[in-house]
Image (cartoon, rainbow, N blue to C red; front, side, top):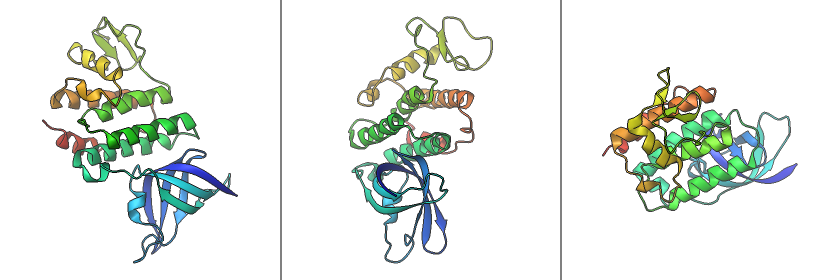
Length: 242
């Protein structure tokens, strides 16, 4: 049966001499694997550029509820990014976000609110003319709303520490080592309260950004299975170095 849906590319894998399998997070069906023929031919049926990581697509697909490998009838890159492919900093951020989402979305069922959040975030990131250096931090923090472990901000205004295990702020240092210290907690609160449109206004240097990314990734590791072993953050840290 044919269905219209939107999708976000997460990963492609070569399959046979001319085909690929594309793992696409769809609005209607969650994560699906699609066999796409002819992509690796001299005159491909679908351009590889369309299937770059986190590209957004309009799709008409054949969907079998219990099928492991689905097929696509029509595919269109929509909206096509105007700046991400040509901006090395934005491209590095996208590689990192792509790796995170691939690990997380493997465990997610269809969730239209989550899909819309990701789609909107990527579209805003593409068109913004401000510094993209804080986007990944704000994205990761806002993403926790949809994954069920958004920080409890009840005491954020007076706290000196953020307890990564408990997901809450505290005036007192936790008895375990998994916390954000008083030097970075204020910046962490600012990022939590930022939007994609104004996150460039948060005053943060590359050393602080690197440390906060480490802490946010630790927060994810504590609350989401399967996110350990992220490697693309190393490239991201290099391009975001002051």
